[in-house]
Image (cartoon, rainbow, N blue to C red; front, top):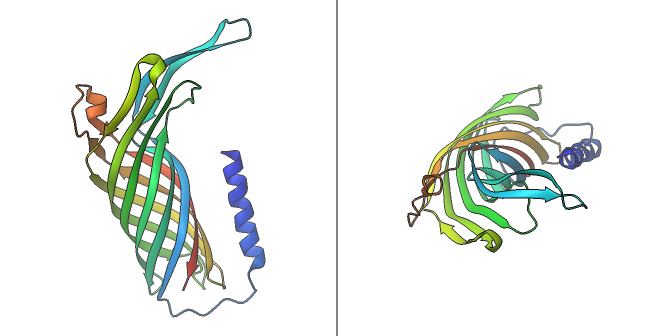
Length: 226
């Protein structure tokens, strides 16, 4: 996590230093496109595999349960947004998200993948007269498709894929955004989403048949305004 924040800090400094002193005069209506990446935590974890860690003398030094969540993980997406009068933004976020087994085990791999389509409306609050720095508060309704849990833990008798129906749920967004005079922008924000997944073929295990997928993500974005 420390490396992520270091990279984000360097990105911000690179763009700010590279901008000219003057600010382009916008009419307040413009389109911007970009990429976004981030990571997050799911609110509900399922304990899946018991594990033990051994020292050089083969003595147990720690033990516990490795878990998987239907929310959180890492994600990457492309974004598009049209801004009206420097106050209202209407956009779409299309991405890929993947949660992984935690902690990571050498002899087992479990991940839950899904694709996201999130239309969003934002209200932009200007922090300076030029309004090139804003706090953006947004609400969206996300559609999540292709949900699949891939399990490769043959050593403990768990192997195969669980497939889930498409689902949808509310998204709430709070972000800080800076757009430089050359149209290059940076954003950092938090996204909350609430949803659950229904499995396509019942297993009899409630935690998996009704997989809870709510979570909170921290994300970083780079945009270019046209």
